[in-house]
Length: 535
Image (cartoon, rainbow, N blue to C red; front, side):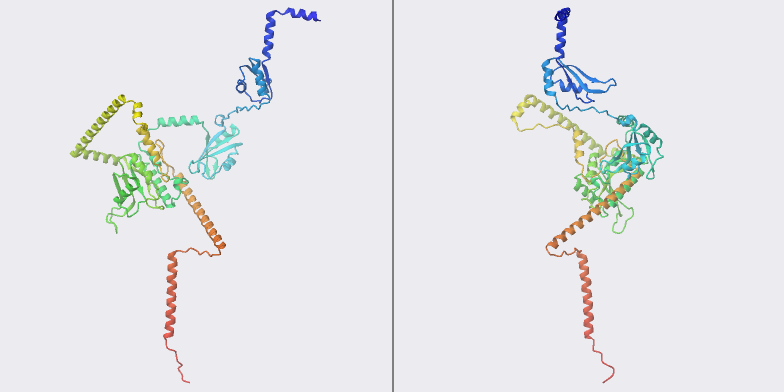
């Protein structure tokens, strides 16, 4: 037996034996890892085990159908590395972040976009209505960022693509609270951005400055709408509707440097309005006019004030700052009579005629031409002096570098040079007040439909009612607390009465007592009646 084994061993050459020994030692560096997640990846395994040494091979075992077994073989290059991996990772909890399959409902065609919805519809109601087409997974109603009110649109995600297609066929046929909903397939974010980009490229430049209409709008439910009376909000919405009607004429445009102010008191004159603007904004308007009736009225020879006026400024930035400081400011005309400030709407033909007339008068005015020449000369001198000062500073810096300047004045801080445009933009953002309302953005039109305007009025009225209820509850709580304290101290709480009412009651009481006294005095002064017969 031993002889046979020896004969077999003699058959292998020395190279073969060396190769076999190398493969044997190589297998000693191979480890098996069990109890793995069925969704583990080779990348994750390498990340966990490569810290012990170089991994030559990672083999995750799978069945014939492709499903994982939960077991893997790892081949290290050295025995010490494999031993170290076994010592540290045996029984160790492998926190593998399983890469979940990212499902995109839009690409699968399971998501639809619903328009023309009632503002009071809730997600549960819409889900119940849309479930007639199939199983609904999710309903998202689009809402305003500030107030949280519905925008009248929503996204609906179905379980099956066929359900979404069936719902799209019922567009403008499905009724939701007496309104026909418009249903269309939802678009990807990339497609929406591409479409918007294409629209912006095709869209002509906004020569009418319609984006400025949004500046100063008071949205119902926003912090700026808190404390605004119902009459003020109604007037704001009426003015907005009127502006929309006026701007249907393409010859009308929104002026960038001219403002209109409503809710001006009847006693205000042009000078009063100018002083008010200077006091609250520290800007002096170029034009300041309170509009009045053509006919003189009783107590006003110049005509009765119409309650609104116009002011203009030399720059758009100044006009914008004035609007944000005055609009809806409760400390200007009072809490219940706040100023309504907006950019005025001008007629293009009238504006062009006015500009031509102004240019003609300037051309015929010799003093104006002299002033223009003087201004040009001053400007040239100023630019020349700036260049000279810049050259001198550069020469000084060449002689005394920054290190030497720091030694001479160590407390000096380097001044950060900010571009003028960026600084101006920051200043405009900082001038926003909590009551000024919405901010305009160039490129976005501020026109709103009549439907949205009426909805804003209803929402603000509802908010005022809720605030009144809350105030009534608070007063009742305070009164109950006062009564409780009075009972504990055995004191009777006197009901608060108006001083004028008390004075009236005292006057009536005194008058009644006086009448009664007169009646008594007259009765005592009368002679005693005697009998007509004698006894």
